[in-house]
Image (tube, rainbow, N blue to C red; front, side, top):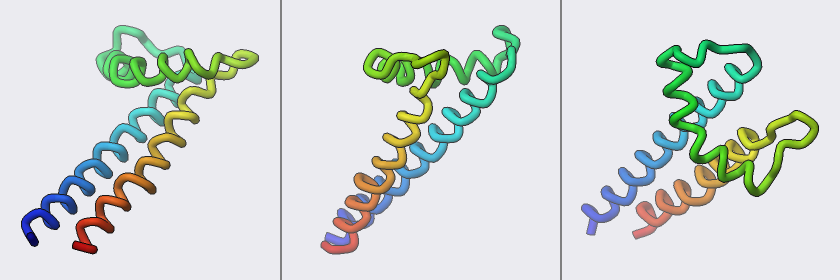
Length: 97
């Protein structure tokens, strides 16, 4: 049974790491949107390709208001919720078994 507990704990920490990395990618995308980045830069291309599928889905639900795109903020709140709810629930399940 301890193998399953360790597995759940490892899954929780990997999910938390992936969410942290994606959170920083979203923040970097929001920061470069304030300047006029070179669209052919490989870093800018990566940031747009990594974030646009998620941000475009949020933009369909919450449209741009007055020129202000709130989709990165909404995605960051969702990531924060997932870290608090899913990751902590998995860790508590692993510790409680």
